[in-house]
Image 1 (cartoon, rainbow over the protein chains, first blue to last red):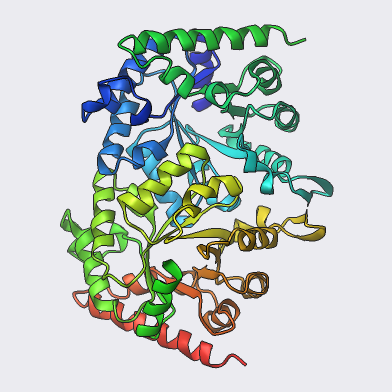
Image 2 (image 1 turned 90 degrees about the horizontal axis):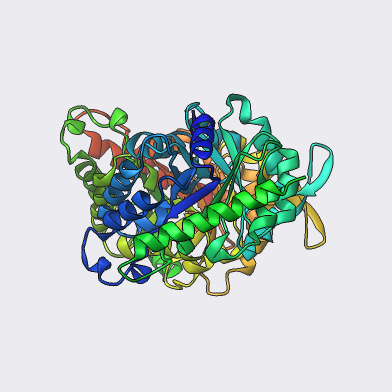
Length: 275
Length: 275
């Protein structure tokens, strides 16, 4: 079950840090990208260097799709390279209906073997059912995203259950209601610590995936304090580029390890300062 | 440019019908699915049998992803099998941010060579920008979807530009505002003809993709009349299973042609009865 796997990895490694595995040839260590199989080699190097410092890994499917058919193979082999006991979140932000949603669930949970995936809420409850049917995996619902345009719709004031509230809060309430099997979580960007705190109040038991630290430059401590649950857990603080591309020299794996350790420790300092 | 390509295919074939290319081994003609390459063989057969009856084809990417790495190859070869002059809509319902959205745009528009793709509005304007930058392609924004759960959020009353309105109407207004290069469209399910009419009023110039006829059983005539623009154009009426799997016998290609012709003609009858 996802939450248990997450908790035991988080406790074993004393870490809420999730490393995003987002290969980008333009940022790759010098010379490495000449190897046609560089993505898997690079990801393996990063995983080997950080596997005792993280609570999860999160490959973003888009970067693999952009490589064409060999991308899917690289993604599969990347997921296989993650040690058992560390959950993998396939960041796919899918959202479709009926048998199409089922096909995506099969692709992500069975073909790729991911422990969790991100989904868009826009199509509503029945679009998530094929994912929710996998009670041993998790479905992380986009709620308040880290990008500037996220507010276009997410911040619109809506009438929901008799209350006027921003759309993202209605999403948080709905997602909590959908969490009957303990396999629903939310995605809230680190760039919005106040909104993150509001979501945590509305969904005290849900795992919250928090992208946007590191390269996206949210205030780490504020985000961590807002995201964790009452026991200081169930927050998945994600950094990608700032860890992966900490160095472009031959020391890239060591540099990734150094950046991951620094982030993990900074997250733990922030957790320790909660009242 | 997408709208021109769409119009010229629609005029040449006197058709607003779009055939969804959604391979499903469980529904495939008897014997065919034993061939490991059946998907491309089947799609080619359907395309050959219907290419003079449609205004577009729409492969749903999920079905190909569910096949693993050979699925991407099958999708690429399917798109290559569509005659030049007929636009291809890669139904991917993507929605992500920044460089990730860019990676999806590269995958769909460059790797696959699709003329248009579907996207989710939840992440807002900047999530669509990398797609909108391709001014010769089109971006079809999910607005009011055909599934029962679509209303969970799409029907919430929101305050937008000083007016209380359902969220899907706010999406239609925003999408119209984003249409500076004439490359934005909307997706509205055939199962909601009243909402479809409301969207057409809010977005008189946009192409509207209308899934949900055929297997999803919307009222075809009502949907067509609500969807077309003032000239009886710019609606893309999509059927998938009812055409693809019209017969499971050796006559499957002829049966697909028969079903497509019937639908095309029924759509034209409905268009002709607009006041």
